[in-house]
Image: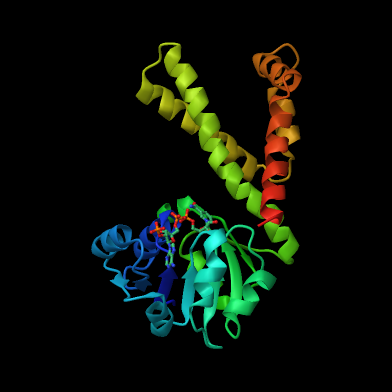
Amino acid sequence: MIKMVGIIGVGHLAGYLVEGLKRASPDIEIILSPRNQERSRSLATKYNAIIAENNQEVANSTNLIILSTRPTDSIAIASNINFHQNHIVISVAAGLTIDQLKPVITPAAIIRALPISSSAINQSPTLIYPDNLQVRKLFSLLGEVLILPEETLFTTATVITAFYGWVYALMDEIINWTVHQGIQYDIAREYVLKTVDSSVKMSLVQSEHSLAAILGTLATEGGITAHGLNILKQKNGLNAWIEALEAVLDKLKNY
Ligand SMILES: NC(=O)c1ccc[n+]([C@@H]2O[C@H](COP(=O)([O-])OP(=O)(O)OC[C@H]3O[C@@H](n4cnc5c(N)ncnc54)[C@H](OP(=O)(O)O)[C@@H]3O)[C@@H](O)[C@H]2O)c1
């Protein structure tokens, strides 16, 4: 059981993590860095977390630390903290490699993790590298933990956390279109989201079939699914998603 965790960098992600951790394990002690003051105070009040005086005090309070600062800030911030060899520092910074972090975090262990915002509702599939029992236990509180065998694959998989955001954009477009056709917003929202949810559940249940095979049973010749899919392909609608994935991968490799 994880009794205590420190978080340095109290921004959006930290908020999701605190909410999910406290729901899964109400007694877990969470020590927050003081910046940003407004956010750390509000999280401390709402979830009974403790605010440290400074980043070093977070590290002095617990061995397990999540470094949840922006990728461009993380190295400078970590270089001002003294870690010891019993520390486990979990970096959630997209694209920052263990080799980049090593000089400022040694002699502590460095683990990369990629929780997403659904941590707040304990539904985050979280990638970690390398495997670490404490880190696995921590993120198991927030959803399913997936361990990657190689760090290079971690950067590739990170792209999917951006895709997670684009799914909201796509669903929003579809909901807005449906509303524009005259269907009430609440009904449109629920109907579109539950349709997407059911497609995900069908895909997970039918794990022996590829998604292309499942789609093949839906997009029958002359039907409406095939008709719309052809237009998406003609307009490069699906290729545009691949181009976006490639662009994000390039950006991550250049952090
Ligand atoms: N958001 C997500 O869903 C998500 C998902 C996966 C991974 N990540 C990763 O998580 C990290 C944080 O992302 P985020 O979206 O939470 O960013 P964010 O909202 O900008 O949070 C970063 C926080 O770090 C604080 N900070 C800046 N300098 C600091 C310092 N010297 N000491 C302590 N804290 C400091 C910032 O305070 P100020 O506001 O005062 O500058 C801010 O509150 C990033 O590396 C990102 O790649 C995020």
